[in-house]
Length: 124
Image 1 (cartoon, rainbow, N blue to C red):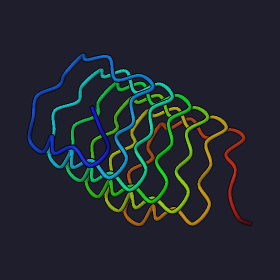
Image 2 (spheres, rainbow, N blue to C red):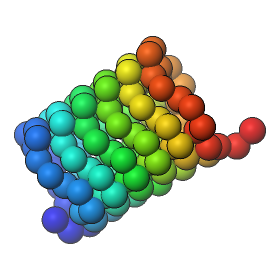
Image 3 (cartoon, helix red, strand yellow):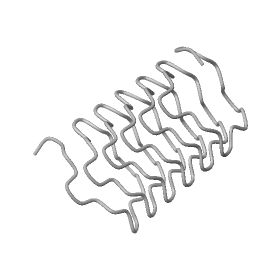
């Protein structure tokens, strides 16, 4: 995979994408259930309305990524960098955001029911 890849609408459920460079990738409406994105680079990626249920995004870089309406139910976002990301209306039910970076992250309308939020890092 290279940066700028178009994977919009693709079914990638269960794939191992750890460490991949998906900078500027289009993953709009992609099916990404249980995908391993550990340490992946998803800077400026479009993940709007993507299904990331149970995805592992530990240590992933999502600078300025667009996750509008994305489903991140039970996703692992520990140590993820969401600086400047747009999670408007995203579903983060049960997601683990331990030590996540959320400076300038847009969480307007996001569902954080049952989300684990200890030690998140961001602006005061």
